[in-house]
Length: 81
Image (cartoon, rainbow, N blue to C red; front, side, top):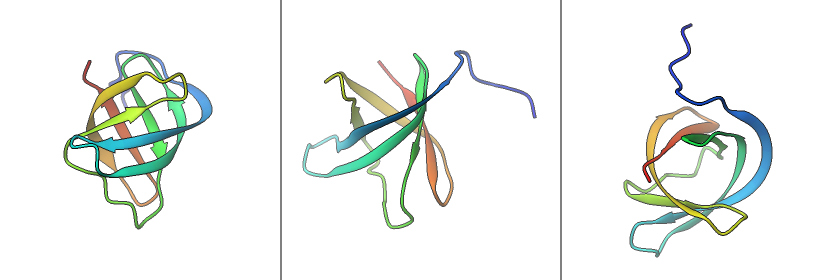
């Protein structure tokens, strides 16, 4: 499989919060790898991601995100800002 990422991801073990665009929905997620352009998060099967969301990282930085892919236990995010 050909690598399509523009930035190398590094393995991490961080807890972050997905926040819906309106701020009403919050989902705690585990970030398992991270780069300057995106992240992979671990999710439970029952977690539906909002269409419009941000991820609040432990350093209190908030990134506007786009969902790139999703499977049963994880999702790939692209940072939009």
